[in-house]
Every structure is written in structure tokens, then in C-alpha cells.
Amino acid sequence: MVLNPPTDARLTDQVAIPDGSPWFDGHFPGNPLLPGIAQLHLVMEAIRAARGDAVRLTGLKRVRFKRIIRPEEAIDIVVAPVPDKPGIYRFQLTIEGDIACSGLMLT
Image (cartoon, rainbow, N blue to C red; front, side, top):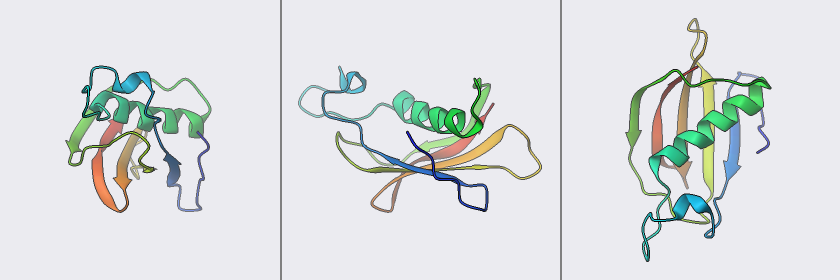
């Protein structure tokens, strides 16, 4: 994962999870979807890559899963630190402009 940090401190990335990924095992045969824990893992990895250290998840707030993510779909990830709240990041995963997942991650 390579993050592209724009000047406004937002972190952006785009990933696609391949069809053979273990994340899809059991979710669900014949109708694969990326589980919520995998989506949150993508966000956490984006924060770790940007900070360059071993960030630890301490909490989640207002997480909403709004769209199913299928294998090979291009997932746009945007993560931004919340101003004046150290360790809190607002995130959003989108597919072709549709919000798939959003919320706050506390580290």
C-alpha cells in the first residue's frame, strides 16, 4: 500500500483485493464479499503506513457499512486526522464514488 499524502493532511490510496484473498474465505461461497473487519484493516494499514510506526487501534466510532465490496473492485481509501483530536482519524472507503464504509478510528 502506497499512500499519497496531499497538502491538507488527508491520506489517500486505492487498492483492490484479489478474488483468491483469504479475506473472502467463508464470506460467502458463490457470493464473495469483503468482511467489515477486512475493511477496517485497510484503514488501519493506511494509518500505519502514513505514520511509519506501530499504531494500535483503541476504538471505533460511528462506523457505517453501506455497500458490499466484491473481489477486484477498486477501493478508494481516504483517511484524515480530526483537527484538535490527536489519534483520531476520519475515514471513508468508496467504490466508484459510492460510500462503502465510513467512520472514526481511534489510535
